[in-house]
Amino acid sequence: LRDSLKNNELDLWERIHNKIYLSKELCRKEDRLEKINLLANIKYFLKNIPNQKIREDIVILSFFHILIQTLREAGTLQEENKVCLQALEVFPDDLNLLAMTGDSFFRLGNYDKSINFYKKII
Picture 1 (cartoon, rainbow, N blue to C red):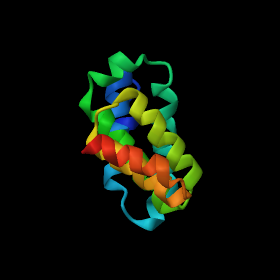
Picture 2: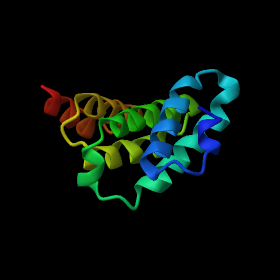
Picture 3: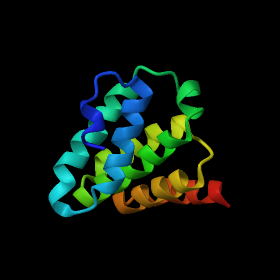
């Protein structure tokens, strides 16, 4: 996967997908910085793509799950919450994102918002 990212002939979606798959493989704590950089790069590319186009690619949903989990592991609660809300703008009905958002609000001490997100799941 690392070698494939050196290939300049890949189109934007191929590069994004390869970065997502590589970020899934980077599970060790020692790889966290590389993983965060990959995820930030993906997020940068996605900001110029309309939400409707992103919704058509289910692999991008996986990206948001990985990014939120990585931010949680890094202990960046405010950023995690921000990304949860951004992800829900793209995938408003995803149960995992609703649960992750409810959990992030809970850990921020905003219990009313947390409950609202859990109610959406039910």
